[in-house]
Image (cartoon, rainbow, N blue to C red; front, side, top):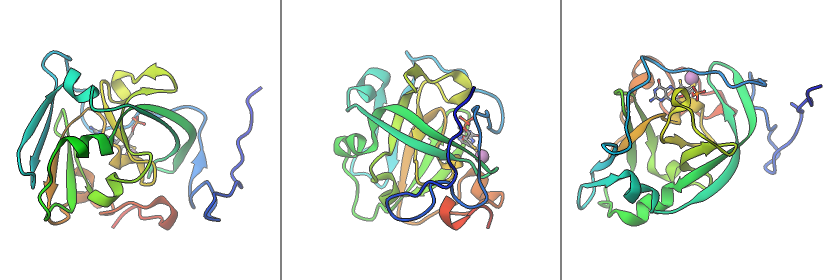
Amino acid sequence: MMTMQSTKEMRADGKLRLPPGQHLTAGWPVLHYGSIPRIDLDSWRFHVWGLVEEEKTFTWEEFNALGDMTDTSDIHCVTTWSKYDNTWQGVPFKALLDAIKLKPEAKYAMLHSYGGYTTNVPLEDLMREGVLFARTHNGQEITKEHGWPLRLVIPHLYFWKSAKWIGGIQFLDRDRPGFWETYGYHIYGDPWREERYA
Ligand SMILES: Nc1nc2c(c(=O)[nH]1)N[C@H]1C(S)=C(S)[C@@H](COP(=O)(O)O)O[C@H]1N2
Ligand SMILES: [Mo]
């Protein structure tokens, strides 16, 4: 017998834990555009470019040595499913920031994935607690279809912002639309304000 999770639970800020228009799902749907990119860890690289003092490229070992954290958060997909209590472990976004030097004009980021997917996020959203580059989900290595070897997790935004197969970040002075954002998804994507489509 499965335990029923509550949809009436409140968060510390008084908002319902389940954002408006969402329903809980027990499984974990796989959603992405295009096919799963082929990646091998020997040639995997993480690139940082744009408004930085110096462009940087990290190998798999270098990137994972930047730091480590674990955080449990809820997933809210714009297609209306939510999944509670996902424990992610990997490199804190803040650890990457400590390893690079941003130019003062850097205010936005474009996340780039293997396979060509992009999505845009304000820098201050990446600096929130709980944002990490995840290698594991609930204690297991993230599977290929969910973003192996590394995916970003941004718990407070709709899940399309959580780029699977992430391989780089470009820092920008202005917000620019990524892949889904150019096809009508909201530029920011706050689930509690139902910022689904523009
Ligand atoms: N690289 C990449 N990341 C992506 C996507 C994608 O198409 N490519 N789709 C996004 C969307 S729309 C969603 S809902 C989630 C789905 O993640 P999941 O398949 O792990 O549930 O991944 C997001 N990250
Ligand atoms: Mo999505």
